[in-house]
Image 1: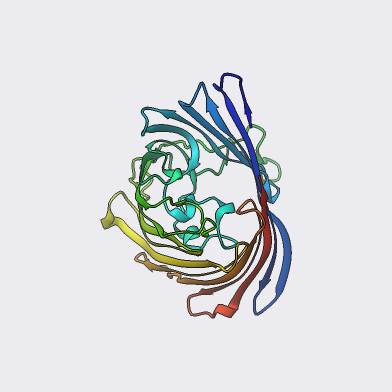
Image 2 (image 1 turned 90 degrees about the horizontal axis):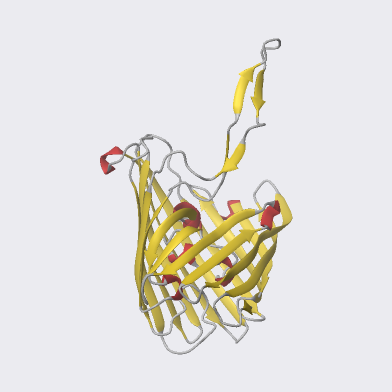
Length: 350
């Protein structure tokens, strides 16, 4: 940590790396690979006293450098902050919880189906990520996510051969949308006791602590592309004497227009997860999740289920741990043995 003599400027530097070995077993083949799933660097601190907070976080994992977080929080009062920049949309406890604070090797299939991800936006909040007794936030986002796309690509036809020619000389990557969608995301929650609501596993121990949350995400069709979707979820977390449990119930609709009468697809899903610290360093955990789809547009719906069982060794809480899990996935009328993922890895950071 670096700070000036008058404490007006503060810089904290931290990082977490998540190397993994994956074994995928299907009826046809077994494959093994190593991956650097995530490699994150955090720079955060305060500017001009405690009235402005900043956070910068790139990811260097999987062979690419991508921007994850770049935000500023400005204090409007003791309990209200204004946030601008790019960060995780405040939808779902599972998504908000950092990857290195999970008690299984990765998030559930419900996160892939309903996870809000990161986006550029502006929001009011009361420091909800620190789990105050009552947490709330409300923001407006681009609605296009964090991924950059290539713009400025031109195509023409070779007059001699008649073959298409793609010109990328003037192209550039950007995550700024041509048209603002926009997307409104809100979250409220209540936390009882000295709860760390966005950190799985009861590493602290002690009396009962719990939290509940409700998130909504609404997108109209203001950009006129005849596409919109709405999401809602409720979630909980419970910790008590080494026992921990988290879960969520999710719903999502997609419309070919701005209103629910234009509905084309809907998703519902849930996950429930539990863990227990069998000693101060060892934990066992398990999870069941299911996602069901209803397709009104005539396409074939897809249902998915997941069963995961794992164990973690905590060398230094969440900052130095080894994790392993066996994860079984079932799609439609298939079997859980059709796709088995065995993961062994670690989280190392400071």
